[in-house]
Every structure is written in C-alpha cells, then in structure tokens.
Amino acid sequence: MSRAAAAVVVALLLVPSLAAGPALSAPEPASVQTPDGFTETTFRVTVYENGSATWAIEHQTPLTNESEQETFEAFAEEFENNETELYVDFVEQAGLLTQYGTNQTGRAMGARTFDRSASVNPVQSTGTVRMSFLWTNFANATGERVVVSDVFQGGFYIGQNQSMVVERGPGLGFAEAQPSPDSRSQPGSLAQSETVTWVGERSFTDRRPYVELGPREVVLANEPGSGGGSLLAGDMLPLVVGVVVLALGAVAVAAWRSGVAEAALGGGGTDTGGTPTETTPGSRSRAPSQPEPEPAVADDELLTDDARVLKLLEANGGRMKQVDIVDATDWSKSKVSMLLSEMEDDGEISKLRVGRENIISLAGEEPDAAGSPFEEE
Image 1 (tube, rainbow, N blue to C red):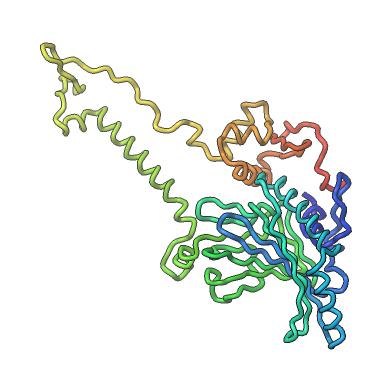
Image 2 (image 1 turned 45 degrees about the vertical axis):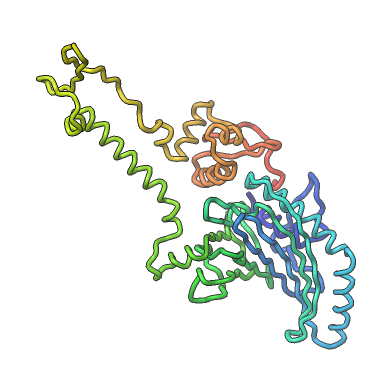
C-alpha cells in the first residue's frame, strides 16, 4: 500500500471536504492539516478488553484574551446544541473509516455511540472541541491479549502539532508498545502507565503503531524486574502441555509394543522370541494381531502456519481466494488476514484485491486483475 493510502485513515477524520465514492483518493500526508482555527489535534484511542475502542479527536486553540474566550463559548454552545457541519461530516467519515478497517482486517467493524462536546479551559486559556465514537472490533482480541496493529495496514501518519494517545481500558495494562512511545504517563513503567503517546510529525510503518495489552494484574506481575515471565508465556502453556502429552503417548506406545508395559502390569507371557502373547481358555497361547497404531497427529498439524498455506496453494494450482483459505484451515478471518500479510511482507506470497475478494498467489501465479483504488497510478 502506498504512503498516500496510509494517510486515508487520518484524512477521513480531519478533512471534512473529502468525498466518499469510487474516485476516493488520499492526499499526501503533508497536506493533512488540523482544521482552520485550531492549532493542535490529538487522536485519543481508549482500548477495551473486548477489542472495541473509543476513538476521539480533540482539536485545541489558544484563547489569548477575554474576547476570544467569549467567542469560543458562543461557538461551543452552538456546537453542542446543534448538529453542525463539522459534526455531521465527522459522523459520515467515521462510517467510512470503520468500513475501511473491515476491508483491511477481515473483522466486521462498526461506528456507534457518537458524542461531541466543546469547552473552555480558563486555567490553560484554551478552547477544545471533542468528537468521539465507539469503534467496534477495532483491536484483535484473542484470549487474554488485545492487540492494536492490523487496522494500521499500510502505516499511519500524524502531522505537525498532532499527537496520538492510546489509553488502557478498565482491567487492562500495557504489555508492549512499538515503536517506543515519545512519552507515557508513568515514565519508569510501561505496565503501570495509563497512556502512551506519539507526537508528530511522524510516519509509522506497516501495522504500526503496535500496542499489546493484557489483564492488568498479569502485565504488572510479568513486567521486567517483577520476577514474572512474559505475557506470551501464558499463551504458550497449551502448546507445551500438548507436546508433553504427545511425547508421553509415544513412549507408552513404544513400551506396550516392546512388552515392557504388559509384563509390568501382569499381562500375558511372551513366546521364546520375546513377542507378547495372549491366552484364551482351552487354547494354546498365540501371538496377537498388532495393527499399526494411527499417527498421533495429522501431517498438516505438524506444519507451520506458513507451510500449511503454501501447501494449500500448491495443491490448488498456485492461487486461492482468501475466504477459501479460511474455510480450508478452519482459522479465524483475522488470523488468516494477519498471517497472509506477514507472508506477503516476507515475499512468500502475493495478495491482490479483485472486486470484494483477495486472491492469494504463489510467486509467478498471480492473476491479471485491477489493483486497489488506493494504490498509486
């Protein structure tokens, strides 16, 4: 995705004149400005345990004298009591923004619970306009982890005098933030911080900023220097247990076939060749039939996720629809979307948008198709 496309996310919310439609194009990042009459803009994202987030935009302007303060107070009353053009445009563009996020991540997103306010801070001599909405499925919530990243496919941009603040929701704590924030509310501890902040002008790379949150008590216990492990260690436990169970199963099968287990349990004797025998009433001892045991794990389950996708593509002539990969693997749409993006970054596959579908191809197997409307000519 081009650098211009990375600016779409910001442009949709900052430029009221941007029109939706087939001819939608993103301005270059340098042209994305804080609206006239304001000097600073803050993007404030509060992330919750279920993956939803309150996305707010706050515009500020200095009020240098009493006259400017009175003028802003009149504006604030009008803004809060009536649906001004500024607010109506914000609601419309929020819908476009969540639709864009749905297309990029494969998660069904929506915009609801809109709110607006305007106020004067006499202590700081500033006027602030705040508009917000609840962005459902904004983050990828898997198990105890809540990750903000894939919604920023293609990167993100904040201009001069702009900043982005990510705030932890109730019960959550920061486990990781990349790139390193310019500031955090607790300079000495990421886990104890309420917010992390990046300051513009700044262009983020693909899927950045990356913010991982988890249960606050777990994050605090696993913070470096606390004596705990990493947050990801908990996610590895089922895998470790699975490996141990498989190993014990293999040992048990080998022991039974060698006769050691049967002898230890007081089972039938062995013939002169050491082969376990079984005895039936009134009959002579005979060697039991010993069919080969079924493999403990299917071959596909032993493959890495990347290798499994490549094997699927090879078996289907070198390319597949992304939705067919979801069906074939029984993975979630979000997992497949994230995995394919990583594989594309590593050069293992290519991904083309054709209509409403993604076509995934091995190198050299790409179909002829129209590119994304966000790609540069």
